[in-house]
Amino acid sequence: MSLFNSILEKLGFRSAAATKKLDEGQPQPLPQTQPTPSAAPASGIPAIDVVAKLEGLAASHPEKLNWKTSIVDLLKLLGLDSSLNARKDLAAELGCPTQIMADSAQMNMWLHKTVLQKLAQNGGNIPPELLS
Image (tube, rainbow, N blue to C red; front, side, top):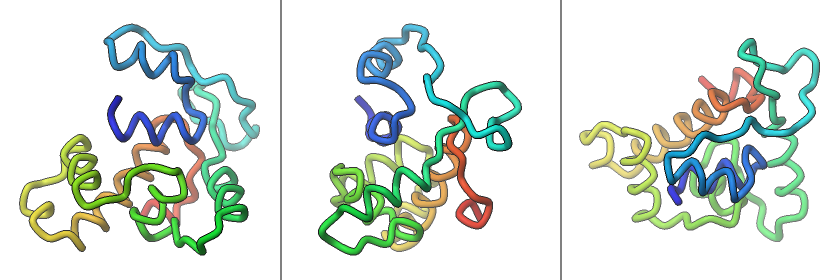
């Protein structure tokens, strides 16, 4: 399973079975969540309140993690591998330009922004200030 699919699964975008089907190239059902009326995307896909889920995880996490700006902290909060190699794999998976991947600080910033944008594209309710 790809690292981005693991992120989606940890946030409740899809079940493990649906993710496995996606990895195998089979059609995937839409997530079964209750959208907030104003947050549902125009495509009809139910919105997932990513911020609420992450804030809930952060409240019970033993470390103080700044997931709103740090890809390392976001991955740690989700219980995923946050090593440089894992982040490079995720960056490659999401199409990070090679010149950005050469500088880990730039890659981390690109990766954080791109992960949040991809979550929004997949039905996540992400505030605009976190997407810019």
